[in-house]
Image 1: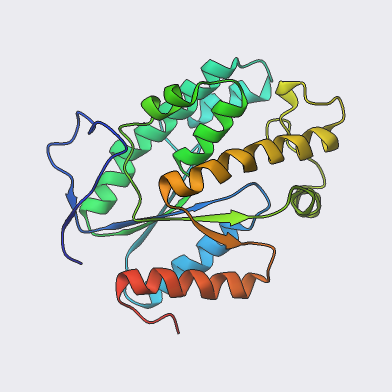
Image 2 (image 1 turned 90 degrees about the horizontal axis):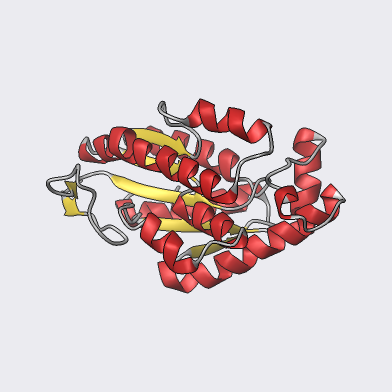
Length: 234
């Protein structure tokens, strides 16, 4: 693939002398239970079958702070600002050490969530919109963002099917929305969905109805990504 100059949301990171990369970054956004991981794995296999080298990234995967953040979350005592900065550190450590080298080497990077989830979470927890945009201004702008839209009640059913329980943080229990985790999950996911709805136009999301069958979602992703990579979706 030819070199192209990548853009950043704001200022370019100081670690970069230039941003001319041949790789491509595709982001899949959506709540827990929306089917992101399954679709990304199938995309990876499809892309590799067509000769593309693929790298997968996501939240809480940096070597620097991922384990420490997971441990801190288990205590359910993180302040909102501390959690925001923890996640930002995790993201930018991956951007410098994993994402940019992969793009420079010409790989296709599939990201399981990106800064959009982090900004939405922060705003729901009281952060100013301008603060979140400034915090992530050195983030790389993806080549495409696919947002999986699923209703809150459908997400509850899928999460129970997968884990038989709901996650404390994904249910927004730290926000005091409700003492009942089920009710809190519904309210929290709706707040996040409202933030993503505002981001759709701002960041040019390609919205996908994730209530449909998984094979249809995969065909739609292959068609859209295939057109950007000049490869057949069949």
